[in-house]
Length: 86
Image 1: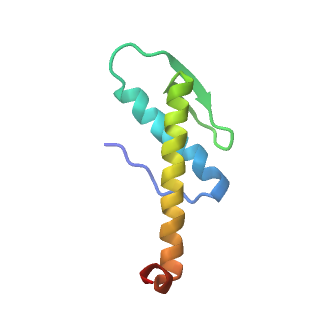
Image 2: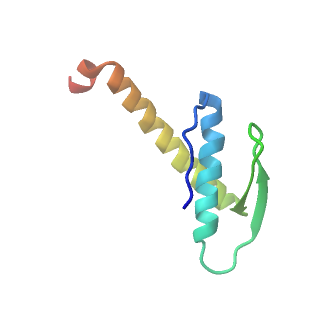
């Protein structure tokens, strides 16, 4: 069993953590032969493996952008519920 304790992050740390998590998942689930690339986190004492290639990097960054935009919308809706129902 693996347990990840809750993390309290600053805004600027969120993207790096999401990159680490998504790249790790995609690397572990990749089928066939892949070219691994080791990446060190700048803000954390952590190294993770990812599938090498600009295409994968673009894919992960697009998904992170989508996630962050939806998260920001959700926070706005929580702070101002009347605006989201209008």
